[in-house]
Every structure is written in C-alpha cells, then in structure tokens.
Length: 209
Image (cartoon, rainbow, N blue to C red):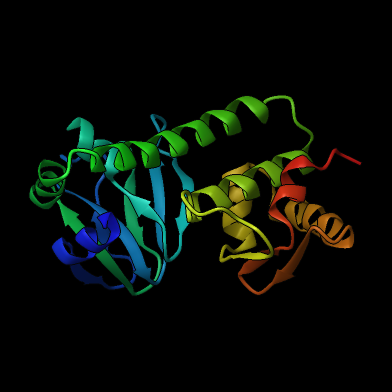
C-alpha cells in the first residue's frame, strides 16, 4: 500500500550527468529514489577536501532524514550519469503520513537501518585489517542499495574500483589486490565498474585469512 502511494504521489524527474541534485547544507525539500542511472553522495570537509560517501544505483533512497527532521542536508547529491529519480516532495510525504500515520514507521525504519549501518561501519573498521575494511564497505553498500529487501544469492554492486578505493581510504592498486584475494576465495566476481557479491552473508561473516 505504501509503495503504491509513493508511486502515485511522487513525480519523476530527469537530471543530466554532473547536475547538482541536492546541495550540502540546503533546506530539505524532498526524498528521492534512483530509478535509472547513478548518483554520487559526497560531503565537503572542513579542509576543503571532498569526501565520497556513496555511489547510489537504482533502488537507492536519499533525503528522508533531512525531510523528517527538517534539518539542513549533510551531504551533496550529484548525478554521476544521466539519471531519473522518483521525487516525493515534503507536501506529498506529509499527505501520505496524514492519510496513514502507520506509514511514518516505515520511513523511520529506512532511516534507522541506514543509521545503524553507518555506525556499525565506522566502529567496526577502526581496527580492521584492509581486507576486512573492504568486506565491511561492500556489505554496507549492499544495505544502502536494498535496505528493506532480504538479500539471498548473488548481488551486483555497480561501483568502480576508483570510487570504492576513495570510500575505503586505500589506493586503487591496494584495493585491486584486496579484491583479487576475495575473488580467489569465491566471495566476489570483479567486472567492469561493478562487483558481483556471490554470497552477502558469507561476505559479512567470513574471518580474515
């Protein structure tokens, strides 16, 4: 029911490659889902360096936290390719929760899962070896791509090694070697600008070897 209302009340908008979809520290106006294409979620740090947080593919939602709290956005979202989004404006969001207050719980669940995943990644990676950090980040990307869908079987993450290295904080060459080790153990398959995770649960649970 909620999914039907989001589709019914939302609007579809297109953005060209490199277009700024949402600026950092801007007032929240909508929450959006990627329908086609890819977006980059970044944050400008105090020293002027841009930090890449996530590369979002179809199914990725962004903007719900700022919309629900009415706080300014903490990140910028940029179209990494020509992109189509499903946009749910503040007015339409409020219309949905006014018509069905229980819908608020599902929006809150989306945020809670995202928040828990970020906290887990930050805390768990402080003392992790590089390979474990790669596995943790891939697991986090799986959660961000499909936060409310149980995952079983192979899942393809459309992310380049350059972007993944930037998110993890290692060199492109180091990441390539780490990914090759995971591929040898059958955890992933490496392809052009994508990584196929063969067993998400095994990726999360396997100990360092």
